[in-house]
Image (cartoon, rainbow, N blue to C red; front, side, top):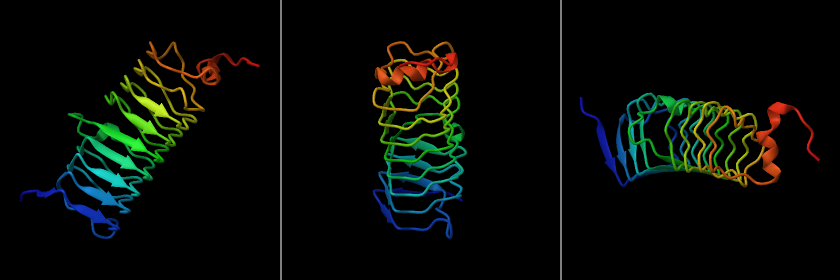
Length: 190
């Protein structure tokens, strides 16, 4: 049985918790105010799609293709992006809540995280080269053996990054944010 192919369609206010999204390929599609919470998007392909105002919390992403996919105003708790198809993985996030999500061992260079909440998100062994975290809350986010070269953290806050455990060459930090690079030393800076 072949997969559905959808191009340039708009899906508005659809509740996929009751009737699951058909496994298929979605190209240049827009999903507005849809509820995908706890859905299974295994083996679906999303190419140049936009999700706006959607709830994607706890969605299964096994083998899911996300190429040039933009997420805006979305609730995305507990997602495991490391389970996505690695080939061409390219996403951006604006005004999203990504708490408790994982990007473990993903290669997501030049990714934009704008005005987003990333509390307790796992970036262990992630390649984030040339990415931007603009006004993001990174409370208890994990960065271990991560490539953070040329990453812009200037306007983000609550991060704790150990320079000895991560590659941070030419990364950008604000003067007030530099304390997040010294957390492990348990020192007071006044």
